Image 1: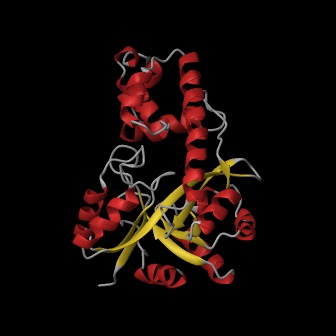
Image 2 (image 1 turned 30 degrees about the horizontal axis):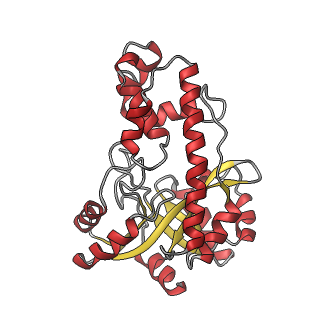
Length: 292
């Protein structure tokens, strides 16, 4: 049997994910995954735990992070994966603190936007969910859906009881928080260029996550000029024709290929399973390790 990998996984150090670092290693072992990377949103808190825990499993581990950036050509949110980053890098730590500041401002504006639409939100409960971390849309939506004052709001019935119940967070986000949504807040963060540079400065390898999220395929050329070193060609967001395109692009442009599920657990992305995408070949990890 071919060995498989999953280099895009979120632990509960990501505010919108469910499982501990140890639980992820346990799930990976049960799923016969040979190499993993935990790439939490704008957080390297998992790295210290994972470095210790990996010794208890027959699983190879890649220290990772996923930086949330703004792509300058269309101001879209783009995620840059950083593999083998040095978790003590002062440049990286400063960058993460900077991103946290942006996230706090977005959180504030999203709550205000929903309140203007006459939804009830208990900000203390939102803070309890996230602890010291800035809240993302997931915590805000969870409070919205569980707040008793909203239960009879007809606007939410499709998410609580109707057709959108199975993936209520996804659908509400799409309907309210994306561009043209009723509670849309323009995204703010560091630029994609800055994200790529700080990963390199901290000793890491920058890879564009789920490139299907780019508005135009030609934007890959811009990221290549910015210094991206790899493409997450194999992703649960990609159809076979997309994977074929990105594999060909990577080969033509001498870029690394990675493969990841973007696993979060049952709350935010219940349809995505650990290591579930076909084509998550161990050879991608070997090439990444060799570049390092």
